[in-house]
Length: 219
Image 1: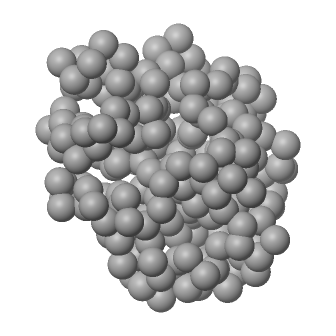
Image 2 (image 1 turned 90 degrees about the horizontal axis):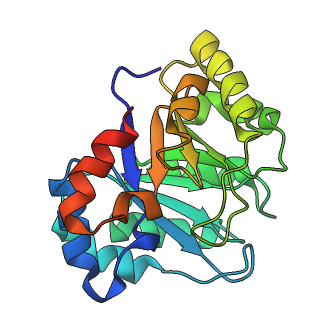
């Protein structure tokens, strides 16, 4: 487990009318990553943003863009997200694509690669890819929409992955995504997450509260 808990605010919960300003404000408030939820209306029942949106705000901060691709197929879009400025790209093994090929393509650009696993997916799905991964994302809601309730079963998945990572691949970051709030953050950190994705919670109270919210999410 890393020494510092990282916070990756999801811009899905931001004010899209001033997205560039929101990204800059999050960076100023101490965010470690900017989490970008990409949804295609096919793999998940929602449509969010594409490479052009990422590119349009990339120059507003130098902190890493943590791009979560909830899309199928994956492979045809990797290059575009890399060009747009992604520093981390996480994909879903549930997609009907060649996951190893996609991971290799991400890594070929010197971009960090991650696997995001849905609530109903067993954590062991990541095992064949551990040597190539930089981050594992445990989904604690069913992907597709922001503002959902946290699924408690994700905590056990975090604990099992934490042990596996610590035993054999300590460089891998363990991220939690979905329904994170101030009420459940303590149990999430105890279970072993070291990167916290939070949308609604980060943005609660407006820009004046971003720094405080991010600090509270670190536990």
